[in-house]
Image (cartoon, rainbow, N blue to C red; front, side, top):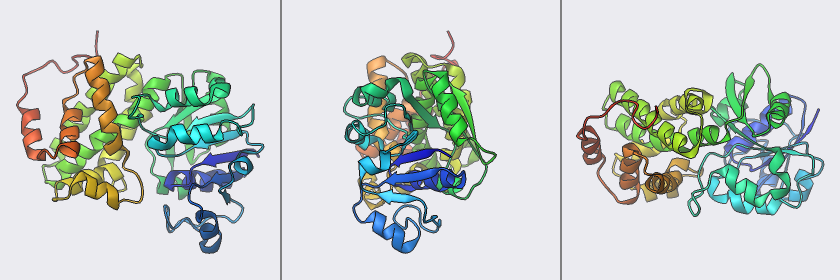
Length: 337
C-alpha cells in the first residue's frame, strides 16, 4: 500500500481517488472548494463533479494542502490547465522530497504557450527529476466504474514512469510507459480542439464520413505541431494520440464534443462555457495552440477554424467551406521528412 495525494477534486481527480482506493492505497484529495469536504462526507459522493459515483469513507477529502501531501509517495495533479501554475506554486513547499508527481491535466498555458510539463518544471524546480505525465483515452466515469481503460505515462526518466506504472497499473487500468513527454502532452491537449469541430459536425448532421475526415486531418495537424516541437511522430499513433482523439471526438461524455454540438444550435461559446460546471479544455487551449502554430509556422487550418468560431463568432458552415476549398496538398505534408 502506498500513500497517494490527489491535487484537484473535479471529476477526474475524484475518479482517480475511487480507483486508487480500490487498489488498497491510502488516498487523500485536495479540494479548492471550501464546502466540498463536508458535502462529500454528508452525501457519500462528489455531487458537484461526479454525481452518482459512491465514495468510500476512507477517501480523505480536505482543503488542507500540507495534510493532503504529508507522506505522499505519489502526487497526482488533476486541476484545470488554467490553474496549473497557481496550484503548483501552492504545493511546492509541501511535496515530500522523494515523491513522484504525475500530471493528468491536458492543456497549454495561454499566457506563455507552455505545456503543463514546462509550467511544472518552472514552479516545482526541486522535483523536476520526478515529474511524469499521464494521458490517454479515459472518461472519469469509466475509471470510477472500474471499466477497462488504458493510459500512457511519459517521463524523461524511465524509472519515474515505471514507478507510476507500478503504483497504478491493474487489469482495469493498464499503464504503458513512454519517454516522449512532449508528444504525450500535446496529443492530450490538442485533441480537445479537434473534438469541438467534430461535435459541431455531428450537431449539423454532416455524417460519419465527415467526422472521420476531421479526426484524421486533425491528427495530421496535431502531429505537424508535435514534430515542430520535437515530439516523436509515432507517439500520435498511440493512446495519447489517436486513442484519446477517437474517444473525445465520438464519446457522449466529451465536454469538448458537446461544446461543438451546442455551438451550432445557436448558443455562443461564452454562453456554453459559463453554463458548464466542468471545464471544456479545448475552448481554452485553442487560443494557445493558434498562437503556437503561428509562431512556428505550422499549417493547422482546423485549429484556425475552431478559433474563429469560438472567439470571433464565425459561422461553422462558412469555416467548413473554407476548409474544403483550400488548395490541393500531399497527405503527409509537414510530417514526413
